[in-house]
Image 1 (cartoon, rainbow, N blue to C red):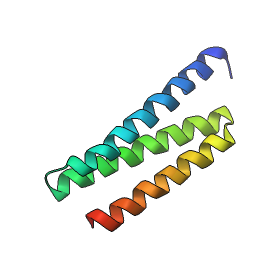
Image 2: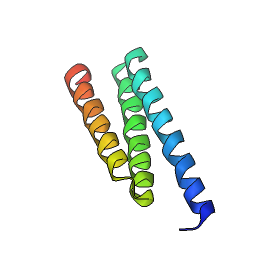
Image 3: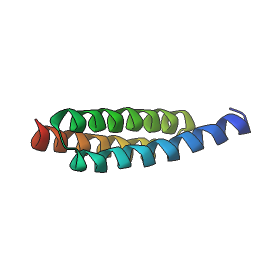
Image 4: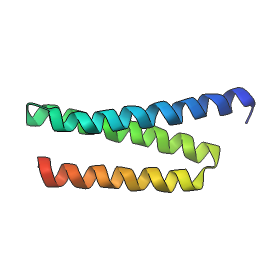
Length: 82
């Protein structure tokens, strides 16, 4: 992997995680079940992007941390919004 690709993956990792956390927070501010589901979907996709970037970078501990966070978000959604 060249330096540019590594740089791009690091940016993707950070930006995706930030977006995922914002989407997760927005679930709680949703006014309808459909809005909550949309934010949940946004959060999941962003976590998947962050996990993918971490895997490509070889950041195994980061992958585990992000997967655990995604599992938490899924559990919260299922408990509180379905």
